[in-house]
Image (tube, rainbow, N blue to C red):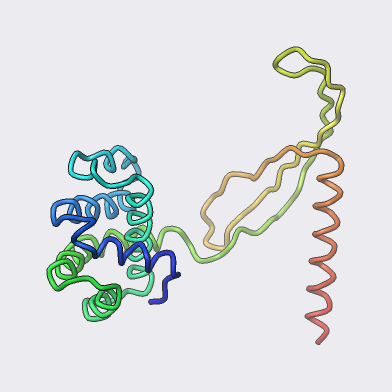
Length: 195
């Protein structure tokens, strides 16, 4: 498992018993797992009374670091020794490592199911449709008289799950910029395939 310096620093703060008491560590760890496993989980969990004394910026940093570590462990199907070694490098004590590993083992199967459902292939654009829209007034009744393009990308995934189309609005300059970048990408791909 390789994590960024930002994530490592968040884990090191989380390992510090001076910043996170045992009860605060437990609440944050459970909150990190619930935010990943439960679609209805929200930020209210970070408002837990045990976490009130911790600076919100530090709290969010450590929450993101814990969640990232959990995701990476799930992605690599890490075992207990691998996770333990990594957390030891981040200055976790034995008790916190054991608690992390216990919580991970308890939620491992659900985490792997969720990660597996995300898919591994990027979306494939199958068609593009567009139309020209001419905006006369804004919501505030100011006259604008400006054209805009409404573009819809029809997409599919190789795993045959349905995906909603991607729609966006842009000005003529933005559309020209997009077309130019797509042409550059096509040329780069053509050059790469000739090598």
